[in-house]
Length: 416
Image (tube, rainbow, N blue to C red; front, side, top):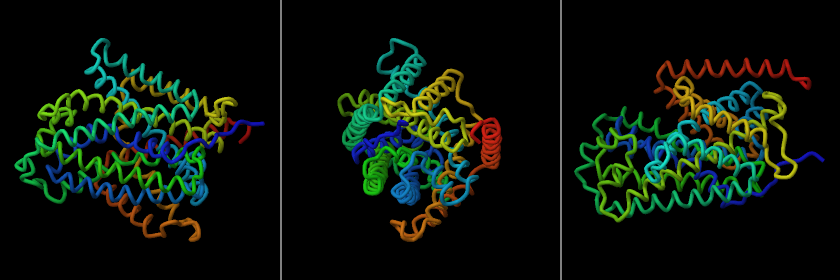
């Protein structure tokens, strides 16, 4: 009998996967970038980004509840739209997550080196990828447990940052509130939107979720609400402590803010939280990418060996090993700037297809009606207008490359 993926993820596991994917580089790095384009008013941009992300999250939840297969939007695009859009979603997901994983691994090495400065940062980056790969190969249940522990440490560190920093907030750091006007707020919303997109990892793993019709919508809603509240609280404390200008000129704005706080050990706790946050993102990347490879292997959009499932551990082991090798190469060689630049386009395309698929769902399958996916699609289109032309062109070129790969795979596959 052919091995299959096992349904072992319960509500708490699904929430932990979503939070592990969201609470990473976004909260520790991107908040500083957003502060640079909007000033303290990036807090408003944060709420706008959270609202649009919520629409997209509900669309993802609505689809995953009805179609609980690995692959997320790749699967929905095939079923409800057409193969070209389905493949586009899958290919763009792989490119954006693989390129981001290299950045996250390097970020982990840098943060962990501050805690344990005995080896070069790159040693820690490589060790993290290898250890998290082994955790994934041990099975989804063990990987889920490791992820829950990682997320718990990250959450506790950020909660300590918020309460430890309240006494350091000064009202003068919020003026002028919107030095770059509405345009700055809109740009900060577009930047911060990408920090919220990890909730889709829950949908990508839907095949392994227990009672997906009930569990996935609840997990997605809890995850996105928790992320919005946490991001808003942490950002408010950070800008109130050191000001938007200082945040904008730092690659680690939360560490800079913690240096100005009087709470005991807060800098150490914040650095530890940053390290575990990067670990959580890396673990969720391996989970999500390997399941997308599985889904695309099943439809022969990628080589058939990706659909293989280990008979004992019930995990897509070839997909996990391939993901680890690519992550290691990107980490060691340096991130491919061409791919990273196009990440904004790939994410907007992915969620645009998600919302289109949700709009096309039969009425009886829709949990939230058509207004939610329509609003989500409108939000994606509105943010895409702000993208530079070179980013859009880069994204289109990467997408065309994917269709060339797909053509070659189907041509060379004996089962095509």
